[in-house]
Amino acid sequence: MEGTKIKIAVLSGKGGTGKTLVAVNLAAIAKNSVYIDCDVEEPNGHLFFKPEQLKRHDISVKIPVVDEKLCTGCRSCVAFCKFNALAYINHKLMVFDEICHSCGGCSLFCPEKALSEREKVIGVVQNGKSEDVRVISGIMNVGETSGVPIIKEILKYANEYQDITVIDCPPGSACTVMESIKDADYCILVAEPTLFGVHNLNMVHDLVTLFNKPYGVVLNKCVQSENPAETYCTEKNINVLGKILFDNELGTINSNGLIAIRQSDKYFDVFNQLLHKVSEEVQHETVVNP
Image (tube, rainbow, N blue to C red):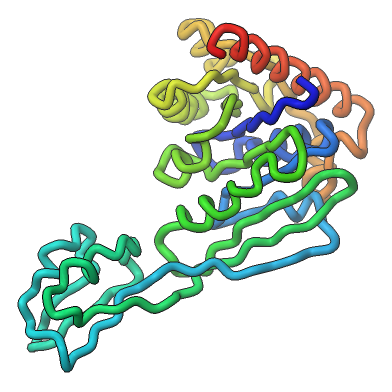
């Protein structure tokens, strides 16, 4: 796989499942890799990596601005906007930038050229290094409604520095997750061994199937008892890449903001084996679906 540019997306049906644990440790064990945190509403991968040599830059979107002297109140822009970001009230055009999707259509449709655009900062990109891992994080400003523009920007870093990129997706299966996995070569679905975990696994399983992505499952927080998520994988003929046991040592490492493979030989072996399995899966997919 050396010399091959691959993107591995890690996702889960909800927060707290262990998605960031898997993504951070895979990026760290891969070495000379890129870790991209697409969970822009609550990025926390950088808390573990503690990247140095940080560079930051703002991310902006374009928001319409009305020239009231030119606006005739024809409402062409209001009729065009399917997100209801414009309204004509009391002889005045109002713009609700919180729900504007910055498509620019209203400006194009205005027959009086009364609409122009301004830049609005919605977040930042943070770029740094942790040992031999390039760490890219998108951070959305509080109150913004969509992190998709930030995710599009940070995914431009995929494979820019190294061969392996690990994408830490937002939780769930919404449009931000779709944007995060759309160019991924392989998806890892992280699930808890409970009935609720099965419900969340089913969500992301449907998503990667819809996107026709190769995938496998990592079962996290496993105990020596019934495992509905593993049963689900068996029934659906889903490949289980690995099982991570519920472990106080791992919990302590995580709660201290440390990276397991850098603290524990046991977890170095666990994630090293997982990386090799994923590498084999990607190589297989390359042969079967070149």
